[in-house]
Image (cartoon, rainbow, N blue to C red):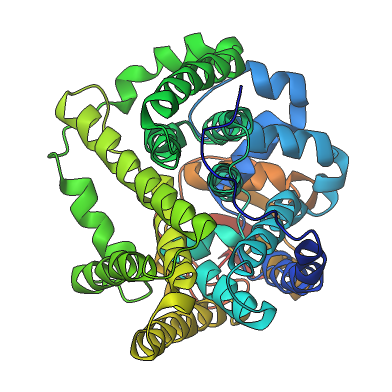
Amino acid sequence: MGHLSAAPAPPPDPARWWRAAPLAGIWLLLVTTLSLRGHVPLTYDEAWNFTDVASHGVVYVISHYPNPNNHVAFTALQAISLPATLVETWPPLLRIPNLLVGAALLALLVRVLGQGTGPVTATLIALCALLSAPLFTTYLLLARGYLLGTLLLLASLVWAAEGRSLGGTVVLLALATWTVPTFGYAVPGALAGAALCGRDLRRAAVAVSLAGLACLALVLLLYAPVLPAMLAQRQSWRGAALPGRFSLGLLGRLANVPSTATGVGVLLLAMGGAVLARRRPDRFRDRLLLLTFAAGASFLLVAETLTALGLAGTPFWRNILFAPLFLALALGLALPALPRGGQVLIWALLVSNAALGVRDLGTSFVTGSPAEYRALRALGPTGIERALEAGAPFFNVRCDRLAEAVCQAYAAHLPGLSFGPAESGSLPCLAGGAPPPDGLGIAVSTGGGRRQLCY
């Protein structure tokens, strides 16, 4: 598949990857410590995804689709890189592939931003982007496919912005869709943006149309073994949400201050910055800004259209978690071309918002209090690691329904494990002081009677 008829962007400097490597390493060390030390409860989805799918091997992963929790490309990555026996010894290890993906995403952000600014500035903006909103920050530490999908989607846009072959863009977009199916909603916008980057729009439109067909064919090929199962679940995808509700609700989730006004302000500032930045031409920057906005708009348009037609319900908010990251990236890309007053405003926004992200991480993960972190509270079954670290012997472990997958992941560490209805929520805590939400209880027997595992 050929190139679009556009002047190529300046060739990327390979040295930028090496400049980003130490930063990515430090970031990996930090998030690994936070995610694996036991203060971030293993969630139902990530535990189920590994114990019920990834642990059976890569062939099983790509040929079984029991429910949409199976982010196929990410689960296949887990199956290839993580022996089940290793995870049994310490279940949080199943998060390592996602932590590596986060480090790669940080390196890519530094490389992209470094094309228009210095390495220190690029590093600071990249960190601000990763800490842009709870919608994104939550999945920096959890073993789900959303981060891998974001990395692949952003890589596809960068590839197109650099004027490379459409074939690479198609492959990366297809892999992003193979990771999270709803990421395919961004494909039409990404390809349309690639067409607008070309000099000869007619020829570019033909090339992009062919690329769209190729992307669709590749996605169908990747999903072919599980397509019947996906179609059988189609009824559960339908919903009755009002058209526009998803897009309006997203505005309140674009920053660490959860309000629609803040989201609108960030969006307008990013769009205004992109327009003003065009006064200082930069082919790569202008193309990437166009592509990021086009991909986000496409996602919302497809999601709302499917809802209006009754073909599918609106996706979960986490299915578009790349939105706040892309807005922070847009602000960073536009920053060097803006007047001084605009630069001060954007820096103030990025740094203050990132500081709130650090606060959330500190409160929720360093102190071990997930109840302070809205996005994680409903997902985390219990701090089993905290109970194990306490050293008090326990047995006859009984897990409620919503904690079942996590208990299965820790089965080698939970003597007398059984499953059944929740016991009394008023049981005293074995360790920790905050009982889990309803339906996530784990009760154990000790020398002093029945206890529950708490945060």
